[in-house]
Image (cartoon, rainbow, N blue to C red; front, side, top):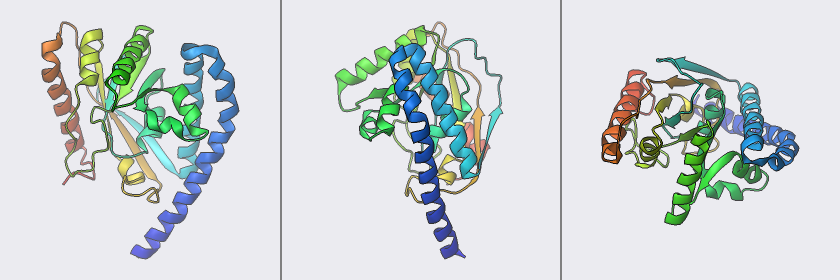
Length: 252
C-alpha cells in the first residue's frame, strides 16, 4: 500500500507542476501589461491575477480551501498578517485566504527563476536577508505600503519550521513595523499546507483539505519600541495555542 501511495504522489506532483506552469503562462502576458501601471495600481491588479492563479491551481489539484474565522476580520483598514511557515503551499494558500489587497515579504532569490521570477518581483516586496541595507530598504517599502491602506503579510519564523514544535522562534521585524506604524496584527495559521506539500520533497503533492484560521486581532495602539518583545510573545502564544487546539499534524 505504501508503494502505491508514493507512486500516486509522484505522478500527482508531476501533474500539479504541469498545471501550475500552464496557468502561470496563461497569466504571464497580463502581468507584463499591468507591470507598466505602477507599483500601486499595477501591483493590485497583479495580485488579483495571482489570486486567480492560486484559485485555479487549487481547483485543478483537488484541494479544497476553507477560511475559519475565530474572530471577525475587518477589511476596511490595513493589517499586518503573520502566518506559520512550513510549506511552499503557504504561497497559494495565502493568496486564496486573504481576499483583499496586500503585499507579502519574500526572498529575493525567488525572483531569479525565469518567468515565475518576473511575476514574483512584481507581486511581492523582496528582501535579501544577508544584507542589512537591503533589509532596511524592504522595511521602508512595507511601511509605505501600509500608508497606502494596503495590508502586508510576513512569516515571522523567517524560514520553514522543520521541527515537531508548533512554531519556530519569531524574528522582531513584523512586530517592530506594527508598533512603529501603529498597525494591528492579524495572526493566521495554516493547518494543512505541509500535508498537501511537505517541505522534505517537491514530489509530495496530494489533494485534500486546506484550512486557514483567522485568530484574534492584536492591537498596537499606544505601544512603543520597548514593547516589541511583549508583542512578539503575545502573538506567538496566540498562534501556538491555535495550532495545538486544531491538532496540527506536525506537532509531536
